[in-house]
Image (cartoon, rainbow, N blue to C red; front, side):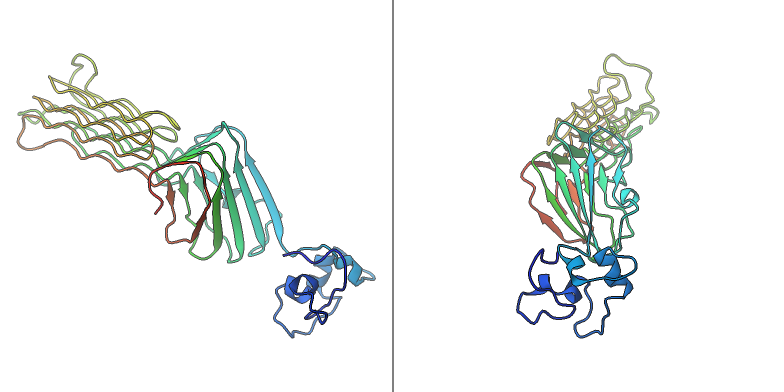
Length: 320
């Protein structure tokens, strides 16, 4: 709220019926009826007059809130943390942030535990943020499974990691928001339980790591999967080996394909952003049927926080 730029102002409740925009008491969020003086520190801070004579005219158009605007204009695979970037003008419970990702810019993450954009923690109830996403924001892709292990989950595109009730969050813009793709499961072991193949990494952020197989190179692809593509790329292809074929990678919003079975099952392909990986193929060992597909990260992970979602762009993955 901002005080009126003209007309009558009152220290307490506006007697003229002009409403809260004419009341210094309301602007300072002081309990109605509290005794106030023009020499009070909060009064002087609002007026911008540190000492000396002060008049009500100094209050015209003043606001007790701090506006902080941040623009992300360079592509990065390092998570943007709002709390860490809040700046020195931040006032607890009185700050309104606007964070804009420019068109053509990709903001990702190098960790599946932090979003491409992450609020961080430390805010106070009353703080607000509007994330304006006109570029691309993605979580990091999950790693492919090693040696028949399960693929790992992708990270969130936007992560509301703040304590519940401390930050009012709005998302607007017309770009792309996607969770990291899930990693592909590793292919199943051969009958001797000695060799297996790796799954492909999920797409998003810095790209999910490849899953490593341990079978000496067998044709193409090799027994290890491929790493997932960065940002809005595709997932990694799953590794093959001894007639097992690795699963193909998913593009944005598409799951990775499962690997096919043989003496050594092929690794599952990594998922595109917002999509699951593929499961590893079954080998001829009865002891291991191949790793499970890694799930996609959420486009927006609310973590119990309220969200005003006015985003009109493309979303890959859930908002949960």
